[in-house]
Length: 99
Image (tube, rainbow, N blue to C red; front, top):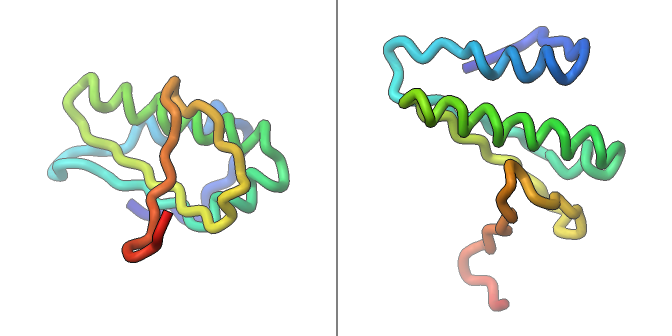
């Protein structure tokens, strides 16, 4: 899935873009957002809403048998993501790193 030229008019448009992904001929989609910590630092409320929309739409797809996975990549571990889609997030630790 590549969605270039996308312009966010509002968060409803973003939600609709994810809801109406074509699953014909595929077993699922993965959405990867790199440097997702930057929007969380710039506008935490907006970024939280975007993450919640992604979680909500992923759940809706799952209910109808479609798999939609989202990975938000962040390097700044001080970013507070809160509850996304009603679930607490977990940081994935790099291999070989002591806790």
